[in-house]
Image (tube, rainbow, N blue to C red; front, side):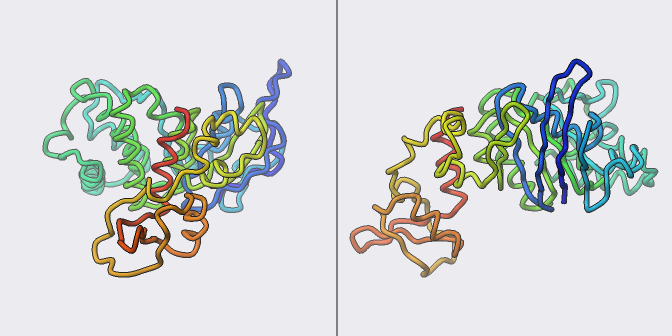
Length: 311
């Protein structure tokens, strides 16, 4: 768990980048910091691993003040993925991934197994990619390496600062899907910065909308879309009115394998009703004119909503 208690960041010129930040990020949560440029989201992220020192307040990880950690141990135990992939060009892919495990003095065989495990995890054949140089990979492949390098020493916390914003739309969407699938397997605490509401809604368990160094609203994607806290949040989402009135039928997908029966919902019911019911069950079966036409889950609704908000 990461806890901010009245945390502030003020620079010598008087700029107040973050103001009185009270925030709890739960263990295993995919937590997204979002807001316009200059709102303090990247500063907030970088204070977690002490790349930026806090000016006031207290920041704890698992109950321990970050100031009490050895700086090297703190950063070794927190993975970090940047927009600028920053792979070492003269090193092979395997050597890039092995940087932190080597600093932590893992033995060679353990490092080799970990490199292969991580490459396989993101669909890159170790026999093909471990000895290649970064220049031999596409931008999307390089960013995959950036993600798994952050995972190499098996940290509990991963910080990601707009990691996909420099990629083309197709590569970006594919990496978002890959990251969601990866998170299902590894269940790390991920703190992710983006200015893209569509990306935030697709990825986040909870979103923290920031403006002028302050938290404006924290909630699940559904809560923020359905109940924006103020006009700023509503404007930033940009599509709440288009989502209102949409029907469950629009988000119907095929039945999950093995699903025979379950709770049903009318195809003409509003999406908001489905979201309320999905707080109590994992999947709803959609019924229209006495026929079962498909199913819906929280995830399929989030994917739909992500496609509806302004990029």
